[in-house]
Image (cartoon, helix red, strand yellow):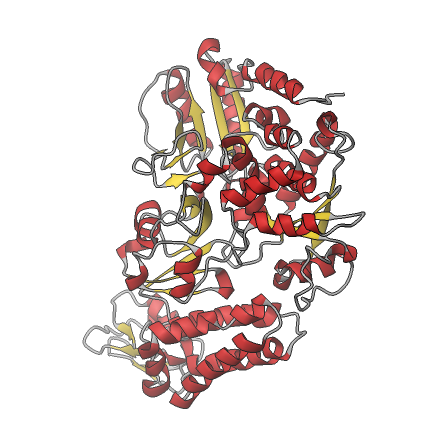
Length: 620
């Protein structure tokens, strides 16, 4: 048995690990050992990281090199997967991107063996919690502090980075003292609403009951969001430790992680971590000899977006339909099985151990007056550096998109950024210098949400973007309340009509009025925020809506029903390639003579446009 009975025993175990060169990179210089870390999160594996890792293992064994090859979670450079960090004795670690099997062999032969410089090194644009210098790096990793650094399936590597030391320290405090630290830190829930975590814990503590529960919301369902998944795949122990801390603070002996079944790798690593925590004595009875007992189990969701709302999530775990209920009572009063329950999402919990280790003053010194700490964002869309970032609250959208994100793909013009997923809104160029925090994003017509950030360029049609999000909301609505079930369906029908060129200017007034009605009358937060994409695009792109309903044109050229293909007679040489490609025989003409497109027969498929080699076909 590996059980650790005291904080002193944990520190001894940490020292043993730190002194082992095969487990800790700081020991490598003395041992002359090379360490290779391969990003093996879902994004890396999908890009071929497993084959890359095998290539390193085979090459190292064949060359008989003194090296350790290990897996780690997501480093954040999702655009450059597979990614590999190489730490040579006496050298700073470097991260290589786009490492296929051939590149792996080249890294070993040239960089590791001969010390030659090779292409593919990625810039390290973040700093760890040990150094806070925002002038040096835009990113500060707190929630992601271990992702990309440790093997998520190796308990000792977590212990080497102060794993479970926060739990040991908290168990020496009173519950009131521990909750007070969380309140003073200013940590707000990272799942969307931004409610102060310490106050939530205090409410659950003050409600007395024989049984209480700690619930982790890992149901992340926003399109383009992958923050929580990446944390669970790269550092599951931080969430387990935080849940145990929360359990002690509020007086709960049981914890539940509600995770969507579409996250198989996160589930696997959570299961492994839970078993390891039990083996080491960090879960179970008499943790650290304190008398405190805490157990943890997983509950699986079927991917319903509405189950991200805490009351719907609780009903789903109870075996009921995933439908929200009116609050109060809040879960802190009556939650899972009618007992006081505290619900936080993955990222919120991932911050907790660092707060107790580094102090509430340290955490609250980062960020803004009302939004403390950092925020993890999933950068996606028309941006060069798609990936996972963690930035201090108060950073601007311009810094995130054009510095960290590397700007817009193909040097196209920035048009908008959607923050907060389907519940958020589109922000435009005038908002680029807006500090990112809860209040500023809400004032601009969007919201923080869980952290999805989708960037759009000049080619995106904003009514179509609003329609996309409404289509998602309609599909995911639980249907319990009429404003969401019926109202959003009507909004989607209006947007569909507008994008087909069949809308009217009266429809635009109806869109706005109905959106406000839904916001005021829907049952839960998801329904109340669902019209945000419509309202924000109406506010900032009204001319684009007018073009659809008045001129029957899509300025971005994206709405298929409003596209028209024309052949320029002066450029057409009569090669007949477009005639052969057209599925509806809409193009006529003789060889070596200019052709013509019959607009009544054309279905706007674009096959002719793709086949024409002479740029003789245009879209209007």
